[in-house]
Image 1 (cartoon, rainbow, N blue to C red):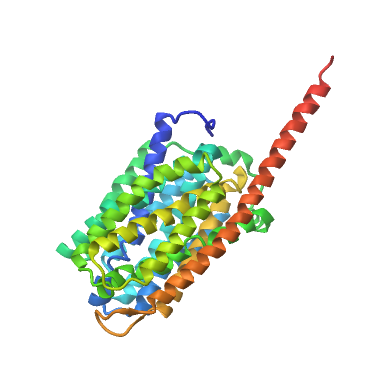
Image 2: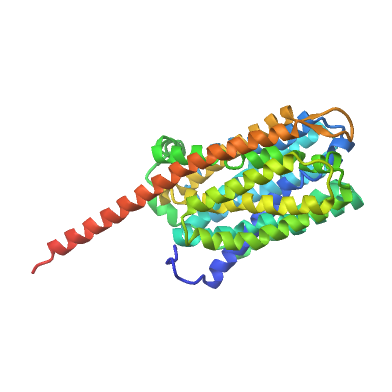
Length: 428
């Protein structure tokens, strides 16, 4: 079902992009809303930074375990059915979040949500890889990742508005309602995706998992992309607390900051998507990473400042962060063969979630909060650690880029040899 590189998207392919973006929107907002609600939750539930870091990491670690266990089965079923199974569980987990009343119930709710929600992204990536050619995936992923910007512009401000008006529980109830609408659209409109089933050779799901894990090229991809989200997991959980208690921006101005950050992301994402299909993806990733490093250094060392200063810094910082995600995902999608895409994406997502979860726990140990509504301490140290991790990630992604280039060259060489053999076999 892959399209030709220069072929225009059909109406159905545009629908696939839209529905995957909406799916990502609900999953991202479910995770992201916890960060701006951090100041409220830590106050109302009397959570310590360590406990809140555990709540954030619970989603990631449970998603990691779930994704790894699901990897062996990821290529054994219709991707639509697999997507719906995990999405139903995700909605149920979010509903549990809405009814949580203390640290223990919130922690359990986030574990359940992570078990199901953490796998949805990898299934979506497998669907994109099945349907769109590599030369188109940058553009596709640019649009799908606009869900992140949408969550900034619409999801987070609306979620904060609901939280400030009717309490933080209402925010999760809102996510549940919207997710039900998206889920029903998938049920009735998304076509079955079974082409990958024709390429299966492993009878046992566990054997399929083992064959995927032991592939050397795949392991390089796992290592390179594991560190990709760690900086965000370390920075985001405490950002709202830092902005309110250190930078002294009012809680009621937080929606404004998230909205303008989202606007900058929604402008830059399609541009980055198109660029990643036209220029070297690794170079684009490097530029985005370096910009993110500079802005994270400035952001984590920020003192008392106006809301518009914070808006400007956040807008530029997220341009850098988003500028590294799209080319990295496009590069990563070129690593697995069709028969292994579901398993590879699941394991890859698990590695990312594990790295992110450990990052959130580590951040909770680094950052210190001496009392209620008091400034966070050592947030600048956290920034230095994140910058170092991003620089390491550049080196690892360079290895991925070189591996894909060798793979492409070998594939072209094999194709040329086959053509020459066919020509020589023809009678003169």
